[in-house]
Image (tube, rainbow, N blue to C red; front, side):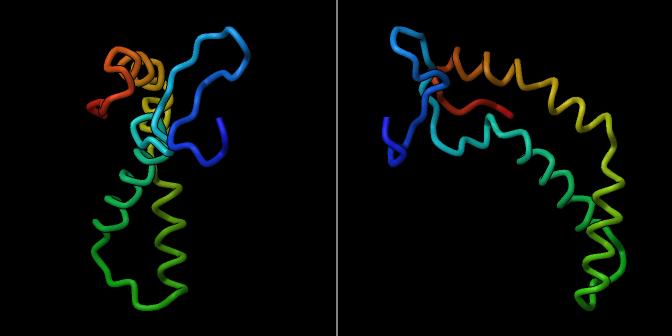
Amino acid sequence: MSSNTRCSGLSRRKGSQHLVLPARSPDLNPIENVWDAFGRQVAGRNFPLTNKNTLIRALTEEWYKLPQQLLDNIVQSMVRRVECCITLHSGHIPY
């Protein structure tokens, strides 16, 4: 496959099985879930972000407040996500 294709395989060795997945699939990109949780935390702050320094401070504070358990759960969900994606033949999965 060339780098211009819309799908990429998990393995490119001859004779090996591979799963064709959409490029940049958010279903299989755990950082999307982290950004979602992070964005909700930032949006839930109850004071205005009036300048660049308060924005940077707020983002830093909220980043460090992300619960480790949330991050662990997202990582641990990857096996289920890949299995679901295989079952649905690379279709949309409910994550």
